[in-house]
Length: 438
Image (cartoon, rainbow, N blue to C red; front, side, top):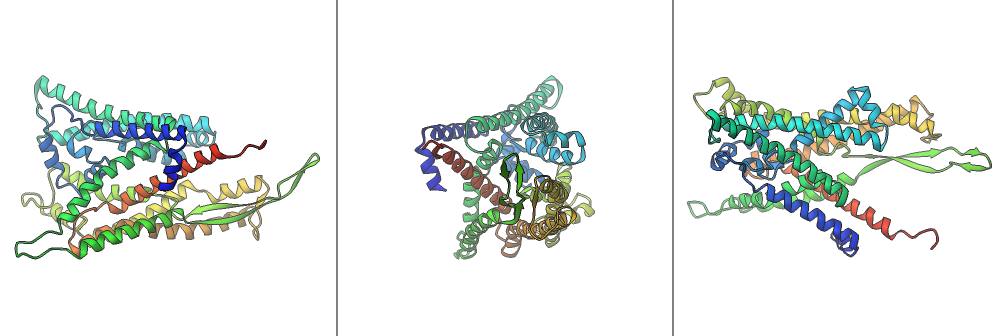
């Protein structure tokens, strides 16, 4: 990867793209340090200090800590991610959107425009919800009269404007930078939190009151396993099953076309991090809703039923880990089923005079693709579930807390890194490709 970046730096045009991407990331990090007016920063930090297992804790990790500090980019790209997920689901359910998705670049531009408007609406909703949460936790300086109304409009407007500005920054990276803009910004937010997470982890390897050193073996072992898992994630992310395809020869006029061999690539981790985000959102929803009402499972004045519920369904519970594991597998199958249609793939092969050796066109081909897809999906689902569940299991067994979102962040970081490197390699190959006159 470093060799690719070094070679890309030698190309003047690519060097400008890399510098431009770095400038956008710098603007993003500056926005994460600009505090929103009328908010008590200490109160905001205190409110989110005990929300690691809630949806707010997950959003704080994805925003690079901007949410926990109450800054301009507190919502980060979460509204756009939610809008993209909703649009992917609606594209399957609504025929008009499905037709747009098949119209090429123009259709994708229209869907992208709809996604941005939907992200704006979700951003307003999340900004209002976060404002109400801040007000209930006394993190807003003014809550009554004209001052309270002005504070509400300012806070909601700043959060919404910050989310819209991030979408624009992502578009600028798409047009003038390197890689996918939204993915790069998400990558930058997560990386900015890693030094703090590593520091908190190392601080648990400290001298105890009795003079001994605590966790001096387990934490280095955890870090070593974490590094090994990164290599495993890279391997599984690039792994794929290739289904051979043979195209029949056909004569058009005096020329013969076809007769080529190709393949259909089926990636093991084709769903990416989406099943984990789905499962984490569902599992975190009860804790988040109860958190809004001040129920955290430790307050004796809260109803006993909800305190017991939170005790069994937090990340320190084995029940949570088991349910989380199977939910990731289920959501992986669900996501693959709405993204890949074996019948459509078989029909496209038939239209282009292609066939899988040993299988007749039509239903036998679609059945073979379906069976192959099911086996690969199971392997990918088990891989995602293992990566997501390992930090939780390790924390429960060793009582070492830190990097609880390790599985999710690892998949995002590795995926964005590989995608960016492939983008650099593609642009370098395009510029170094010899013309037909040479």
